[in-house]
Amino acid sequence: MVRMTRQDMANMVGITTETAIRIMSQFKRDQLMFCTAKRLVILDLPRPKKFACL
Image (cartoon, rainbow, N blue to C red):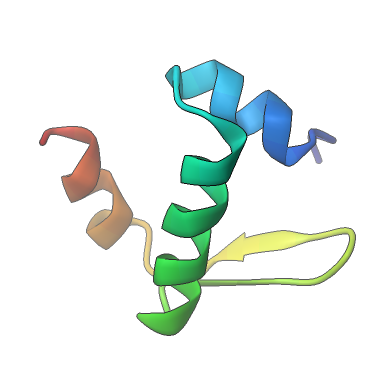
């Protein structure tokens, strides 16, 4: 398990924290992931990987 904040995740990909939160919210709406206060689980890894190539 890797512990990181939303800010850490945003920094890793070079986007603002707000943008990271919007993207994660969209992923939740699309049922690609779910998260709790302490855990983020990717439900369908191939689908989010497609966004990395855009």
